[in-house]
Length: 353
Image (cartoon, rainbow, N blue to C red; front, side, top):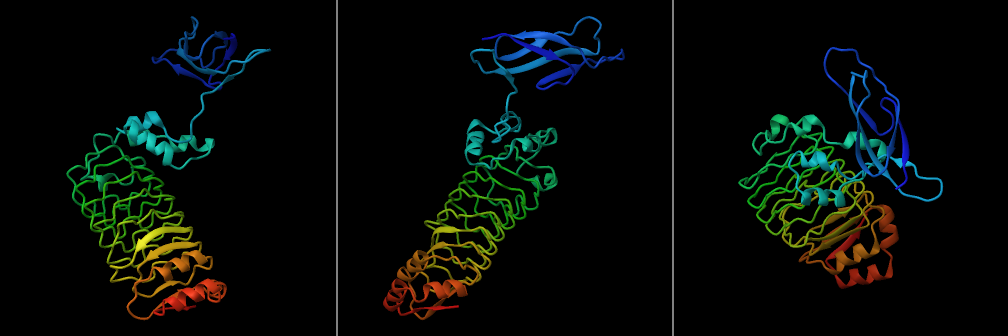
């Protein structure tokens, strides 16, 4: 590797100067030239007389090249995770790897903002599943906590306005997740959670205004999904609700203004519903199967033909019900030959605007 002359002067570039303690005179800067011959950390001792400097640490990442030599480059932040910071709060390599793959990226200028702060690190070992509410205004990245014995996460993180991400948690015994992440305005990332015993997911993610994606969850025992994703403004796709047969879904997607796609949701068991898709302005497809009650897409002007055909052809109505459409969608779809034919084959279904 080529030798690289590096001028050290104060806090220059990637160079960090640590000042020594004591009451003597402090000299802030020293200039000297150092030959860097390999990547890694190089410690440079201050010359005699510079009592205010204990050492200079140079962290160098040099890319080799030909011709006229090379230029040192500062180590760059990945923009995916503060790996060392997350390890300091107990996150495992699996937690970090999943977050790096599924977390929300950010620009380089935001790196400092997204690092784990010392105050956040101080919560590790102090925070428990039972005292979260006492620290809710300090949690940005949730330290690893033991939740193996928890059976209810009712209001667990309610009001943790600064919470950005959580590690994987043992939720295998949880039966109630109602309001679990309610009002977590900054939450952008949720890892896979074991919800095989959960009965109630009502209000679970309501007002998670920054949440852009959800993992697939087990909905096989869930009865109440009302208000579950209400006002998740950035969520553009729901996970598959395969296996879910809830009895309550009121307002489940109310005001999900960016929502485009719902893969599947079985409506056969739903007893109480209404306003599920109000203000879903971007919705194109909702794979609703076995509808037995009237539904409305009154704000979804972009609703697609394939969506409407799927709902009509997979209905389970035993009496007359109505699918209410946005006026633009009604004009576009109500006279479509395929839609007209599907309605003729399913006489219990009618369209309205």
